[in-house]
Structure formats: C-alpha cells, structure tokens
Length: 198
Image (cartoon, rainbow, N blue to C red; front, side, top):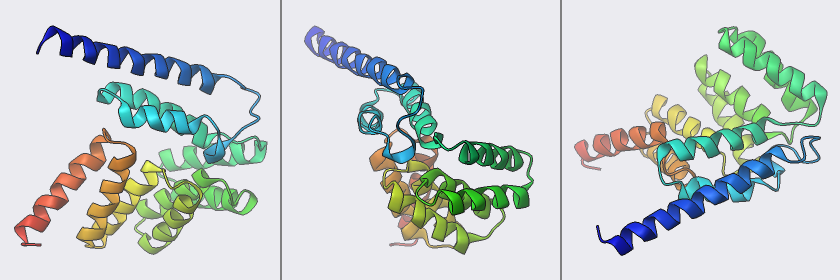
C-alpha cells in the first residue's frame, strides 16, 4: 500500500468516525423525545453511516443507535408494554410476549418495532404465517428494517423457500453490509442453490 493510499484510507476512516460522533450527539440530543421510532429524522444519517462503516465493530455501534431509536416511543404505555414483552421473551414466556406486543400493535399501529417484536415471537414459536404478516407490516412502516429483513430470510428458510430467503438476506445486506448473520446465511443459501444447479 502506498503512503498516499494509506492516508486516503485513514482520512476516510477519520471522516466516518467524525460522522459517527455527530450521529451519537444527534441520537443523544432531544432526550425529551420530540421524535420517535422509525420516523426519527436522525435515522437517515445513521443508515448512511451503517452502510459506510469501515469494520464490523463500527457498524455495531451504529446498529445499536438505530435500534435505540426504533425502540423509542413517547407513549408511556407503549414503552411499558414493549418492556414487558421483551422481558417475557427473554424468559421464554412466549404467550405473555405475544400478548404484550399484540397490545402494542393495537394501541400504536404505526410503531414498526411493535410489529417486528411480534413477528420475532411468532417465529420463535413456529407460527411462520403470522410472522410473515407482521414482518410485512414492519417493512411497510420501515423498509430499511434490517432486523425484519433478516427475520424474513429466516422464516422463508424455515419454509424451504430458498430463493426468497436469499433475496431477503441480500436486502438486509443492502441496508447493513456488515450484518454478520445475514452474510453467513446468504452465503449458505447461495451454496445450496449452486449445489442444486439453480
């Protein structure tokens, strides 16, 4: 590597880091929560940083900021019920989690993360059709939702829809190029299709 190319890479990394610093400041600002969920005006810059992240560790920092904004709501009932659902899910109390996230989708139907969490629990209990429907709602509200796109890939893979699963993982990687799980799954499915001569 020449000195010039090394300096260009260093400068690019410094510019990316400066962008991340600004994004962190933006995400921390306005803690009163005048903005919420997938409509948050800070998200476009975070998605830009996610796409340009120079390494997986940097990408994960941005990913965490995006999840924090997706999970945020100004409605205390939504926050409380989401927390109830997440706790229930972590304890494998899936029925309680389904009830909580279903309630969120009723009181806040435009809150994408409520649909995404409901889709996740339905996937975990093997209710793939409901999961697909809820992923559809999530992506209508937030087409950049790499978690929902990856979840779509997992559901399609469970249904032996290999090509649709690969397409979903590739869509997730378009948004989040360093998403390790999606990358590994996409590579596995590509090999599977090649072995079948597709």
